[in-house]
Amino acid sequence: MSQLIDDLISVTGFVLFALAGIVWLTLKPYGRGPRRWLTAVVILYCAGSMRVVPWVLSRPLVYGFHHFSSHDVAPDLTAIVLLGGGGFTVHGPPGPHIGVLDLSSAARVLEAAYVYRLLGSPWIISSGGRPEGVETEPIAAIMRMALVQTGVPADRIVLEASSKTTRDEAVLVAPMLQATGVTRIVLVTSDVHMRRSLAAFRGVGIDAVPAIAEDPWNYESRIRSFIPSTQGLQFTNAVVHEYVGLLYYAARGWMRFSP
Image (cartoon, rainbow, N blue to C red; front, side, top):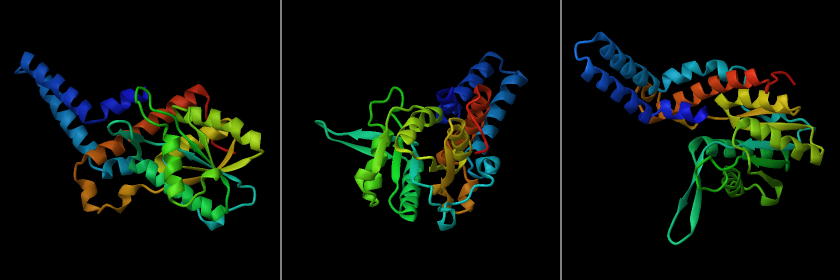
């Protein structure tokens, strides 16, 4: 389901919908239907590619969350769980490779490193497996390398490198925390992803305090947020993905919204 959403809300999706309209128009050159279809496709994708549109749509997802600060520090916060976003591995001949984070994952790593310094020296669980059908390092391993670059000692980082979804992360991380006696964590992920993530972790009995990673594109000028771009389309993809994910997780009974 998630891959289908990603494919539809993308440049590829636009091309497919546009081609369908063109074929329809070719078969019925005087019909109103294909013209309305093509007009709707162009309007929807142009709107979705302007970052201001998904930004407005994302407000209910991020409402009530704030950046983690010294006021949020408590003595029972003894571990950080860092949820993986996107990343990929660049392979070079004849075998060396470099793991690279996308902007969302990089922002999450920076937030986790910031929270680590505030809490002293807690454990960090770096979570995220390999994307399906992709030959790459687990995102958890790539994030660990980035955490070490920010100054977090490697021996304070534990990997969960098997998960494919947010639900997987919650289910797989829970026994890791129980084995170490941790009862309350700081959960680090992107702002639009936090509501579903927090509810999924609470759904498996983990009391989590949210620490949202700042959207890297927030530093972009306000004028550019009204200009269509691939980044805007990616943002729309992420927002729609979260709304669909919330509905699906709720239907499966995988979420709890209060501690």
